[in-house]
Image (tube, rainbow, N blue to C red; front, side):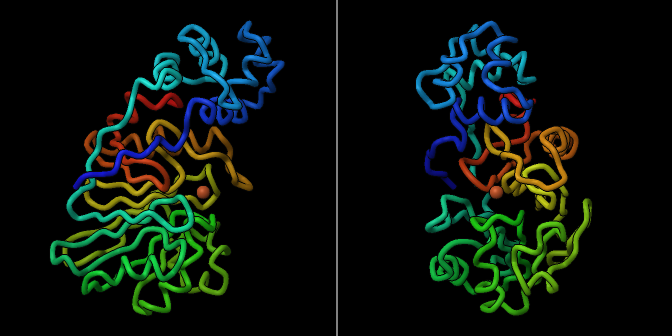
Length: 278
Ligand SMILES: [Fe+2]
């Protein structure tokens, strides 16, 4: 299925800000270490112009980014190519600018929902479009744009099991006690012979979770096409986020399609080849 060509979640200014914050360098220190002008760095972070090839490479070295990949991102030379797998449906949340997904078994009925958020009417319309038996409500993390309609969906589908890491489950209020307390590597049975694997990827939040179904991984705000999520964890750090992606997500097969919480889909192979954070 075709995917509308939407902008990458993060533009060069976002990448620069995230990497700078992650490395705890202020503009003066970054300017000093790169030999670049602090005013120019501040302008790039505002989205006012972009660094040249050489400037991007100099920034990348200090910011522990991949120089070639960051230079490509600064020049906007790369865009992911990935198609929505046939057993997955995407619905943009409304009014949040985040991605929700439904995926199915071969029967076309047994379904799981990733990230119940936005106007409940819009979401329930998507979920009710077919004669679906919703088996799971999978929540990638605690932010409102990924879980603020959990109660409405749980009410409409009382047999659906909510799945959310306990470190983030407080965000769904009283429903937290109904959430299955999953840990890294847990396999959720789905139909007779399929399973959904929970992959704990702390960094964006402490309880951030990705869900793997066959050759598709729903990555929440952990991994975007060409970027990673910002750090909003109490315990986990920027380095934890990078390790979560590098050691857990990048160990998935090359052809695994990544369905992120924001922005267009990508694949594990393309992220290894083009994501400047790795
Ligand atoms: Fe988030």
